[in-house]
Length: 105
Image (cartoon, rainbow, N blue to C red; front, side):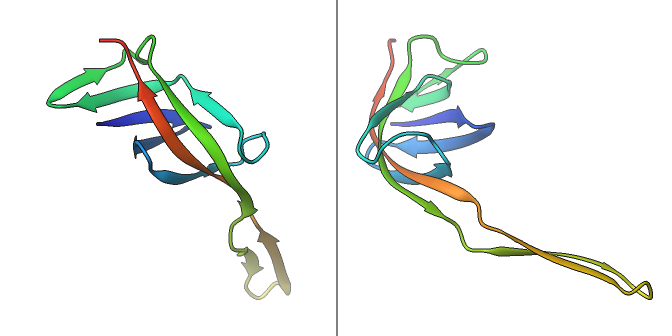
């Protein structure tokens, strides 16, 4: 069984027990959260598609870790103009573990 859900404008395909990295989610480590924007569930040759979401379906997950990704460099450069600007950015993330995928048939 796997499901596709929407979080922070991005879609993720998950199975039960999987650990995934999402955008920063507010909460303490160990808290359980629910995702209700379930777009698709596949279970034993049955495909359930939402229009746009599946009513009554939810994914229960647990917060595992908060952190920052590797630093990326943003470089702006204009040739022959003596202009150069370097900036860095580290995106915040949250690791979650999928505990259960629930839905009504």
